[in-house]
Length: 156
Image 1 (tube, one colour):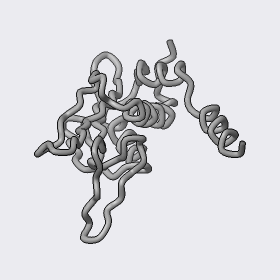
Image 2 (tube, rainbow, N blue to C red; image 1 turned 135 degrees about the vertical axis):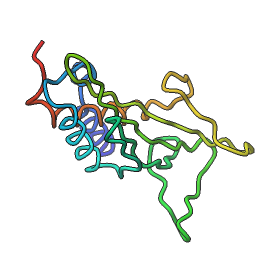
Image 3 (spheres, helix red, strand yellow; image 1 turned 120 degrees about the vertical axis):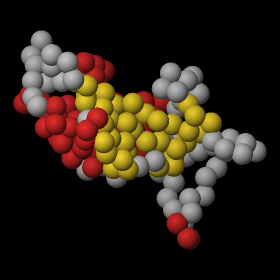
């Protein structure tokens, strides 16, 4: 019973589909380099930044292994991560797109380990084998960045 209440509370606290849609379609009236800086600082609160390309207004979070259900797989002895069949490696690409106004796009870069395969296979953002939690992590980061940029948001 207690576990059921925890699950209901966790679901109730998650972002709504309208919040996600707003974050994905938001545009900002701000200097693109400022939007980039804020997006990077926001992402760094949850993820390590692996590669930043300020001249292209893009960065990627460090690739991290997760189990099939979305729990992080930590490094053990010798900094090696023990991965299992269908473990997923995820990095999030964040791009600031310029136009009349500025947009932020978060795209998952995902690989899946399959037992017996010599290397992980890449899963496109539209791949039907992509676990739902991957999209959820990308949407959550998109929402966090939007909240940090809200004062610059163009009202529609």
